[in-house]
Image 1 (cartoon, rainbow, N blue to C red):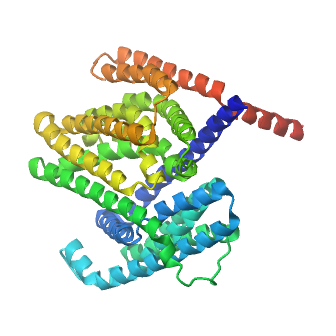
Image 2: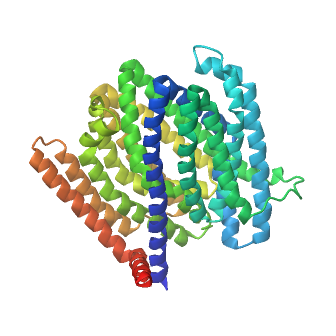
Image 3: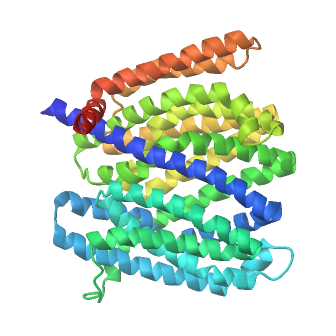
Length: 499
């Protein structure tokens, strides 16, 4: 029975990591298509307006949503694990009440701060009306966040995947015609309609699961204070992270030039966003499962280590492939003058092996509601990465920023593991260490090849090491998961049915 449960854990993690990683990949592909179309229809200035308006909407949303979209997942998940439908239904009311409150707060702030946002964001013209018209988007995002948290806590993973896919497709269908007909005048309507689409899709699934109830709302806001405290720690940590990135970009702009900032952004996006597709399942699937563990130390270790093992096995073959292909991919994704970022990105990719193990343990403090220590750990990382990047750039230029981020990631996992092992008795499994011991040297081998000028050796040995890494991961996952067998059986039954 224990072996069966172990196999089910691997199968579940592998399945939903694949699903949400695939959705993230689709999002990136559609995003590239959309950006190409928007660039053609609106030009550079129009794209700049889109980026500015979106950044303001996201900032106001994050500053006013009190982290409900994240912290509510923990509480709903705990109740879902206990199977207490009455308490779940009641707490869903609490989440929706707080979501409505934060929606109204965000909209009000957007309207009141319109003149300030206009003067601080633009050096020309009066855009106050634009920011006031964007207020509904902020409110819609708050409602969507609460409903999404309910679906995550109730483990409606297929529904969440469907929402993301529909949102990606519909956003493309909405965006292109409006920009084609209205040009830059369509930017605000596109942002609001996009937020409305996402909200309608989300409530379609969440209201079907837990219908909207307006009775029994008296005094309900007071019951959500623990959720809000955890959410605020998440929000403040996010603001600190944004502040750290702003400091880094400001420093690079002063010490280097604007081109250096652009190169840094490209390298950061390639590694932390594209390589992070596999990590997208963490918040959607893994966090609710971890939150439901409670105080069971053995189960906590099992859930964290299983997630680390599967994530490491999935992401490991991707990293050497990306390292090898970066000189080819960058001119395709950007332009040939972005090639100086290759060395920086390759170093950061090496640290992704560590990040695959770090992220599952980083969620423990949030799953336990340990908001203060979560904030302190995040603050320590933000300070480290700013200091390391400054020192790295001053000594080794853009490549030094890659080294700095890699070192900050290593320090982060050491600090987080030290804390979680003492407070929660977390122990990294021998399987995680074994998989890391196999895959990391292969990644280092490919990295060493990037310094070799011989094209035959570079591509020949590089492709061989990538193939070995891929075969090892496939073999281990095949041994530990029944997903492949289930897929084969499903295909056989479908073919026999048609025959």
